[in-house]
Figure 1 (cartoon, rainbow, N blue to C red):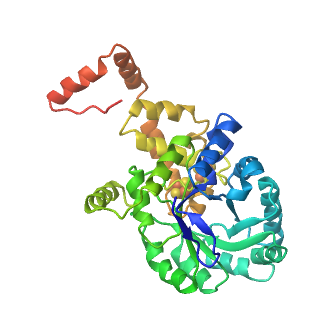
Figure 2: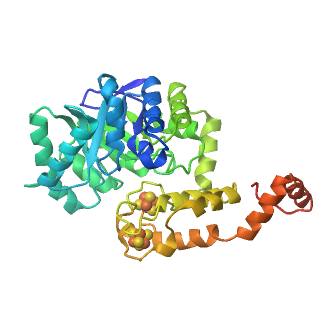
Length: 372
Ligand code: SF4
Ligand code: SF4
């Protein structure tokens, strides 16, 4: 896989990298399933694994693989804590979880407001802990991640950061437009995230090609199974500039998406006291149009939904896209929770191989039943 220079870190990173959220144990039946995803990524030429202290047990799972493959991997993690003391605690935890003597890139995670940036860089802020670990040789480089271009622009102009990570896809281009010139001027490496816009861009190959055709170092992708890793690597390996036809396809796909939607960053989930799988609910809601039975069946496996919401508002405070999460969850519930009778009828018809016949007949009469 092509390697690109990550700004002044001088790290040569693969054009796609593996995000840690996809390997957490709740997405996998066994530890082997989870580690297989990481092994496959490394086998296929990915050399950067990027996660966060807040991504549940991802660091420990990555640490399992690092027992034998640390020498071929750059490791990155991040902390959402802003004080030196608390950030130091997270650095120690990350080092222990990874089972490594040094973290290649440590980032300040998800800075939303100016006062947070001031806290991080000010006296007693997280940067003091990071610099101290850098001096001891336990951290190599420092980065920052955010969904807010204005905050990132301010952060980059302080010259405190070697790497910046922000969302970038055909439907989210503002960050790149604003930040790339600053990054270029200061030789700061760029990591693109949310390249598939939280799974809303279905054409993986062209979505990846789109970001790789810009001046970024790597696109971090949260693959949660081997097939997804292989598809991501294939897209990176066969990278060429987009053809006009591919550009049109992407534009069409982007036009079909609503103005604002859940990008599945999952920032809201750790703060939800009701443990509602918010982003998964929005994901299966999207499936309604393709396969309503599957969507409703999957929805019924979730242990919590909008009926468990206590309306504390924490999710809406943290959502970087200012989504009306509570209302959207109610809407999703009303769409996903109905149709039990309908599902029963469709499932029975499918079993006796009549659903497709009925669908075709209905279509001939001018109607349209969903494919289920
Ligand atoms: S408002 Fe509801 S969904 Fe949002 S964090 Fe609170 S309990 Fe969870
Ligand atoms: S609702 Fe907002 S915070 Fe939660 S996963 Fe979606 S985009 Fe992220």
